[in-house]
Image 1 (cartoon, rainbow, N blue to C red):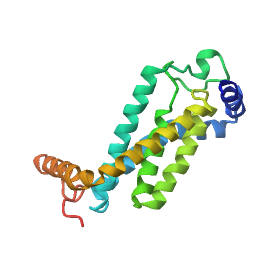
Image 2 (cartoon, rainbow, N blue to C red):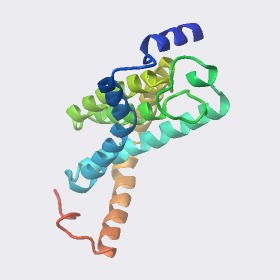
Image 3 (cartoon, rainbow, N blue to C red):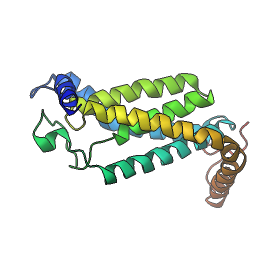
Length: 202
């Protein structure tokens, strides 16, 4: 399996002098897309429809579950990154920690799968899955992950999202109202402008 993993990596990894445009795209997908998605989620919370907040809280629970699973895997089993073993070409800096599974891809795919399983924002959910593929490709292309690290991320994302489904009554009926009360209380306490932080959305 490891031989196949390394073979696939070498097929996808960038050459030592890649085209400038492709390198720019890969770096954007590798680093910036996750930040933009986090900003989008925040915007949906503040300005999106009110009943969508439970969907976002559910996705947040799935993300927390996935992050804990990833941390546990990394602590129990260290898998070296390609550049640590001198394989391929590394084109962005990265810590020499365990590569399996990919946190960036896990982030993208957990949100996407959570939205799809809830039946909300379907186009956004599929968009997250597609951009997750781009993130996965870019981080292999740039030499910091293996293909199986991305397969592991997809498995963790699906598992974490599915685990949250049985807890939906608690997420919708208890956790979401509590978080909304805390958020709205903070908006009022800080006297944030209603035009930017509306509290009466339907």
